[in-house]
Length: 359
Ligand code: PLP
Image (cartoon, rainbow, N blue to C red):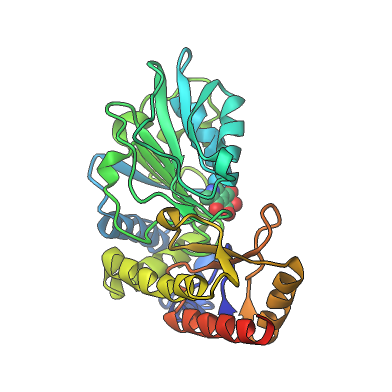
């Protein structure tokens, strides 16, 4: 198997892929694949329920929250959040941390007033802005953050205190990478294709009261209460993706849960950050140390020619996905939950050898 550092869709646990392979043609003796089954069947309903309850258990989701399994990706949530939560006369407040926060804000502007209450633009988004000085507008409907900026490689290490104003987070690229106090949030959303499974299913965790108060004019499919009332089975769900996410959640539980996986993620990323920091300036981390992500490691070499060569030589040695995003350039290693420690050890070694050859 490749050393897979893709940013998303990303590596899945080998055990999960093998289990899916075993059940691919015949799920639980049904004589058909899970993909060929009615989403109203007892067998599929069990998968739908199990995925939700495992997510509740592993992420510590309180009982006054709903777990929704939707379609449309996190990009649809950029619009769904303001459509459902931003009422007339209110302002959607945003922390501007980079590429994905920018997309969320642009979408919200289509539906109402927005305000950027903190930004790190002056530092090219290489850090999470100071959260202590955030002033929310009096009429704030919510404060939206992007807990991990996949492209810049920055991650929140603490969350702003918003009082009675709901905190909303796009956790697409770091959900389940570490324990989170869900009760601090009004709504959390995440596309599955980094830490949760293949693309196709989008997770929304929403506090009861927020899901119950959407304006009447929103399309049925984009209303949170539609999916609450129908237990995420209002229409045909992305059944294979939900089934895969359920297998990933079981795998995560078997690994000891979210706290255990956080330690694993820290051990993995330390190998690579240490290699960067001990390279005498040959490699330079993009994110400021206190904002470094344990999911996406962004770094540069002093010449673009060498960066291109790094990608080329790494690919020849079985590494995948190390080219930085086209918008920021450089190099990036995404080290999601399913990326094994061995891949990070191999990358750290490759980086040292590359430096010896070209430094
Ligand atoms: N938000 C973040 C932080 C992401 O990393 C991504 C995808 O990479 C998205 C949103 C968009 O997700 P989707 O492709 O599921 O719409």
